[in-house]
Amino acid sequence: MIKVAILGYGNIGRAAEEAVKAAPDMELAGIFHHNDCLDCIQADVVLLCTPTREVPTFAAILASKGICTVDSFDIHGQIVNLRSQLQPVCAAHQTVSVISAGWDPGSDSVVRALLMAMAPKGLTYTNFGPGRSMGHSVAAKAIDGVKNALSMTIPLGTGVHRRMVYIELEEGADFKTVEAAILADDYFAHDETHVIAVPDVDALNNVAHGVHLERSGVSGATHNQRFAFDMTINNPALTGQVMVSCARAAVRMRDRGEFGAKTMIEIRPIDMLPGKEESLIKALV
Amino acid sequence: MIKVAILGYGNIGRAAEEAVKAAPDMELAGIFHHNDCLDCIQADVVLLCTPTREVPTFAAILASKGICTVDSFDIHGQIVNLRSQLQPVCAAHQTVSVISAGWDPGSDSVVRALLMAMAPKGLTYTNFGPGRSMGHSVAAKAIDGVKNALSMTIPLGTGVHRRMVYIELEEGADFKTVEAAILADDYFAHDETHVIAVPDVDALNNVAHGVHLERSGVSGATHNQRFAFDMTINNPALTGQVMVSCARAAVRMRDRGEFGAKTMIEIRPIDMLPGKEESLIKALV
Image 1 (cartoon, rainbow over the protein chains, first blue to last red):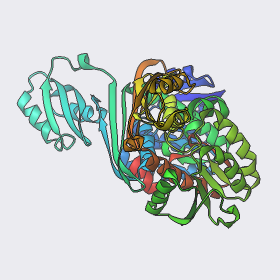
Image 2: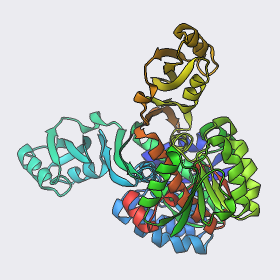
Image 3: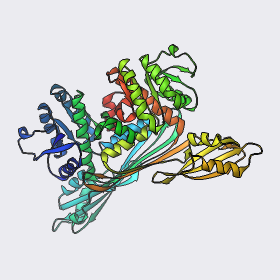
Image 4: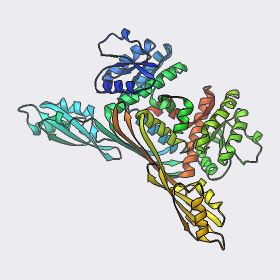
């Protein structure tokens, strides 16, 4: 049995706990909070379900203790840096850190890589939503006069998105002033954005999300090869499950001596699945 | 540069040639026919574009010379056997054979494995077509009174397919007799099948094909996670391209000492792509 601990117990931590409990080859080695003593953790692998900005620190500390980690670090521009910071730590302490293992970055990244292998020239568009953007919701909530906010990402195709921003105003705040501040914010200034005042933002809360990922490309010398990947999902449930599947892969890579920091496109798909190699090949190939 | 040779020069061999020529990191090391002397082949990797039944023999001969191979062996029930036959040969001669590297088995297998990692419980349906089934076309052509035949696979959903069989009759053959023989053939007896007489089967020739692969599953304890993968493609062009991308992965695995026979779910997606690791991660993750 793979011993899996969870660090951080928000939406993702709770979903990861359910996925660990549903896995036939794992046992839960404890749930820890950000400020718990990391020395207490006895596990093969720790799922880092903390806020994304805390991931680099926790991943490095745990890797330096020889413990595998999995995170869903989602700041796209900093993934390569995180990987190169963790690489020498993992190598020195003979462990594996799987990074950016959610659905985007994560499983979508695997689909993008696969489509690139199938049709090397062409364009891939990743269209997100409809679903809540955490980053945009937090940005809107930070505006003066906003008590609570929910920013929905609406896909318009070819990677262009509309932002539907639902806000609950502070008492006495002026809607037009708040709306102007949101539209001027760098998070919203580049997209079509609609601001809508509602009496209760919490009443709109829904963790549904989706993706429509499309590629038109060229295989060899043949153009017009068309591909699409679609999903409509519960966001934290999928993130937690992907992290758990990657925890299995982390331990297998560690056991084979393939130490290092790995993104999901550096993982063999079969390593994410429980069961015997030959049964999986028979069922899936 | 990776030296790639092609064995067999039908539809797939021609498409593979185009994909090798389009690859920035490969050079064509020759095109060989079934009855050429295999000792003449000087290459890192040979693409086996022969009829599928000849693949096991050629793969074993080349592996025993320490040459990597890639095939698109497509008899689903025999893939595990082929893998275990080639495994010891590859290990003994320090080489890699990538097997069943087309689109199904092949890239579809990778999608099925990924979806299983994302939602471990549930059902996946692979719906093929519309497109020509080579196996069914050959079976129809073998019936007495049939001069030429084209069997189209039409997806009806949940993995159920209709067969549209276009036949060109031999002179004097009776349509009703031929139709009854086709409907009774084991290839067609289990599916809804329509037989249509046409004056010229060759006039219908088209290598377009498609897939609609769908999964509804459970991530952790959360049901109703929905996924779909769709493509409409030129069949030999995609098969040739996937083989070429897997040839790159074969050589990389050989160079790292990961010898053996591998299906596509045992390959890291990044290994199929040309270019530097960090650039690929930046672009795709």
